[in-house]
Length: 273
Ligand SMILES: C[S@@+](CC[C@H](N)C(=O)[O-])C[C@H]1O[C@@H](n2cnc3c(N)ncnc32)[C@H](O)[C@@H]1O
Image (cartoon, rainbow, N blue to C red; front, side, top):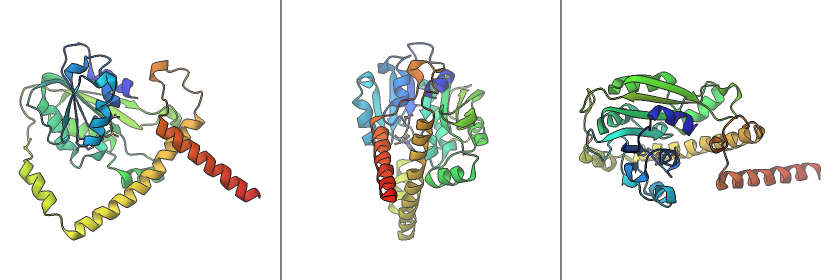
C-alpha cells in the first residue's frame, strides 16, 4: 500500500529534500530512503517515543528527526521539495490546517502526498472506525487538498490484499504547490494559544476525554484482530504482488495471533470437556 502511494510523490531525483510528517516508527520513511538519501529526509512526529524507535533503524540513521505537530510544522516556508504523510491524518483534529502546513513547507513546484484511510461503508466497521479515530470521508481529502491551494491533484485508492474486491479502504492523494508562500487563508498557530488550550481544560472536559479514550481504545481493540484475521484468511493470495511489496506480520501481530489461537484452543477444550 505504501509503495503504491509513494509513486504519486514522484521521488525521482536523489537531490530532493523530503519531509515525512507523522513519521511514527519510520515505516513510510523506509520507503522514501529507497529513492532519496536519508540525509535529505526530515521526519516530524508529535511523539518522542515513536521518533526514538525510528532513530534506531539503521537505514534511517542519517535522517533529521524533529518533534512537532503536523498542524504547526517546525520548518521554514518553501523549504522542501516533497511532503509525505501516511496513516497519520486520521489522528489530526484539524486536517485542513495540516494540509495548509504541507503546502507552506514545500517549495513552489513541490509535491505533497497524503495517504490515509477512508471512512468504511459497512455500518459496524464505520461505527468502530469513527469511535476509534477520525476516519475522513473520501470527498474530504479532495476538499482539503483544494482548500490548501494544491493543483494537479492526483489520487490512487489502496487496500490490503485481504480486503474483498479491493474496496476503497485508503487513499493516496497528491498535489503540486503552484506559487511560493502560504495557503490562502492560512493562519499561524502560536505556541501561546496551544499552551492556553491545555491550561484551561475544565474538569468536565477531562472526564469526557477519559471516557473517549477508553471507548476509542475498545473500538481499536476490535479493529486490530479484525485485520489480523483478514490477513490469515488471505494467506497465499499475494503471489501476484512483487516479493518486496508483500504484506508481512510484525512480531507484535504474530504474538497477538498466537494468544488468540491459544484462547480459542482453551475455549474449545472447555466446551468439549
Ligand atoms: C499510525 S502512525 C503512522 C506512522 C508512519 N507514517 C507509517 O506510515 O507507518 C501515526 C503517527 O502519527 C503521529 N501523529 C498523530 N498526530 C500527529 C500530529 N498532529 N502531529 C504529528 N504527528 C502526529 C503519531 O504520533 C504516530 O506516530
